[in-house]
Length: 385
Ligand SMILES: Cc1cc2nc3c(=O)[nH]c(=O)nc-3n(C[C@H](O)[C@H](O)[C@H](O)COP(=O)(O)OP(=O)(O)OC[C@H]3O[C@@H](n4cnc5c(N)ncnc54)[C@H](O)[C@@H]3O)c2cc1C
Image 1 (cartoon, rainbow, N blue to C red):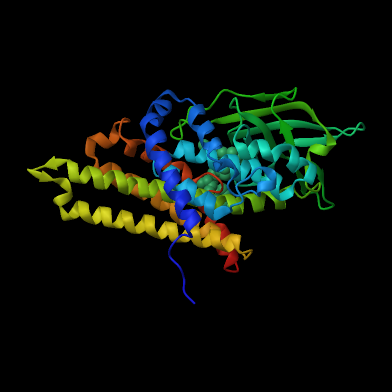
Image 2 (spheres, rainbow, N blue to C red):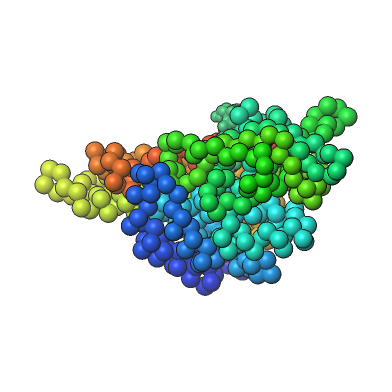
């Protein structure tokens, strides 16, 4: 019996393919998209053609027949170069398509998954609201069943990734569809196709980072969708999104690991090139030690997300490990971005350097798909508190 540190051959091949794509296709152009705050359609289309949006889904639905390990490997390599592109894939798969795959009927899967897997369509997941992010029990959006059978949705969602691109075809939203005897809300998940009358998508937010990804506020005013757009059982929405977020945390941890590793890549290169006091700055032990610590953190984060993904793939409990991986990797991504920027000196503050983009992109990792505080709450709960 041995614990194998190597990726299986097919995953290593995928890693190399995505690494080459990130360097040859993403790296040369993403800086312009980022500075202009525009969505990189051309890059996303190529990712679709490569099958990246279908990585963890079965071939019968147009997927690649892989799993969360494959998704994580691809996300890490993309985020090593750019996080906007990585988060577009992460949200498209983990939040857009995965709820359908996990909880949809056969008919719903056959209708939507092939388009989502090919990347010709992007899906989004709308949980967060202006008055409720960490506390999803505070959901105010409502969906009422009409006599004719349609759901009538009213409410507002905020900060929703991939929700307003030209490729967006579907947003799955959580909504209160009733109340339990104790008065607590019954939350359900309902699919709303883009373009449904009454469904309005606001202009993209002006963000600190992830500037080439799409994030919007969504409004629902008497939006009518067929009863068949309910995802899974009525009232199971809370349990569904907990599962979706548990899995999504592994994907976010892979993104954070990629960013942390990207900071090492950029900083090692820079420390060898930049001279001060007549020698490369990397000749100073103080800089070498920073780099050694950064490498240690990225390496450990990789072990953490791969461990959580492996448990998920093997059908074992993974909630605590996913929270550990998300918490650790996002915090060390911020550390690595800060130290990497420091190594770059004034140039690290200039947007033309990838490290500046990484610094801007790191912070959201401690917030999205469950803040660091929420991860600590989950881990403490698993410890019996
Ligand atoms: C760029 C971006 C993309 C996003 N994409 C999506 C998306 O696609 N879909 C989606 O649904 N959401 C999305 N989100 C929303 C994101 O998941 C939320 O912002 C996040 O979960 C935090 O919720 P909040 O912003 O309401 O913060 P709040 O819940 O208001 O929290 C504010 C602060 O209070 C802390 N806090 C809250 N409760 C406690 C407690 N009990 N103990 C200790 N501390 C506590 C939090 O940790 C945080 O530090 C996105 C956000 C951003 C910025």
